[in-house]
Length: 430
Image (cartoon, rainbow, N blue to C red):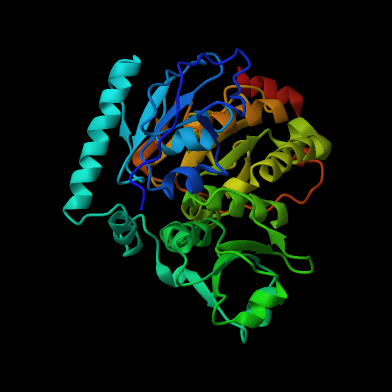
């Protein structure tokens, strides 16, 4: 095995367009090639995460591989490695899954010194019998973030058609060979992704594996010529080659996209009793609740307009798998009080995290644009939150479901004044 690759590097200033030319010794990295080029490599890598507004990278006498990630364009990679400022340089050494952040100066000499120190550590470890592969072994053996191997479904010539082709679920299937090194590197990522995907799609997207050296009928049917090969299977469609990255985050992101493409939008429920609120909020990461004006204030047409906006947002954010609820103003006063809505300003909206008993209120307009901005900020951790009043889900009154009609004013009893002597009334009042 090569300890590292030798590159002929030069001092290079990147163009304002932020693109590396084909002749550069800096390898442009992205989610599709990062796993293959960096994580599965035996080389020591220096990787700069940059934004187009700060486009320079100092190169030096070639002793290691140098790569660059446009973190504006590939936010998933920046987020995966905790990149918050630019430029950030990470050193991917013996343990590719735990890179070190380079803290030194940006001069070529400082970077060379850091690279040499990392290489010395690799040489020392390998001379003592340690290898970079030991980290993969630890990851695949389990752990809280390693996933459950039982969530990866073993597919064979005998069960493939029944389990995959006849299924309404979406499948990502890895065709592998036991002797394949890249397959072994993929295993912990595949296992972790399988567990996350199972939980986040309620089992509607599944990850499976086929040992192509044993089940040669399947390998021949799908023209498998290299390992690992990943294919996507959807009922009634031709299988599709998976072209994305091979980290767990890449796999999960693609699985969620596949799920959202095929999944119906979540149901929008009226809060009629305690069970509806409890189940919706406890079964989802967030429950989005609208308090709509009284039917006498809007009529059926106005209310349906608000509900239509909510349903469009539920469709837009269905990949998040949040719960969606609504109630009429005044019907659930304890709920309004616990969310600080306070009996005015309808329509109103709140999003509750029942695990943390925190909520956020919509401050903008009750419109597609206003709600989208509100939910977008929540999904990336922005926006102010408060504790749900009382620290628990409030009491919910059992009410009748809206019948879909305009409201009717309550009927008052007519008073017959024919038998009343008005002169006597005036005397009594005096």
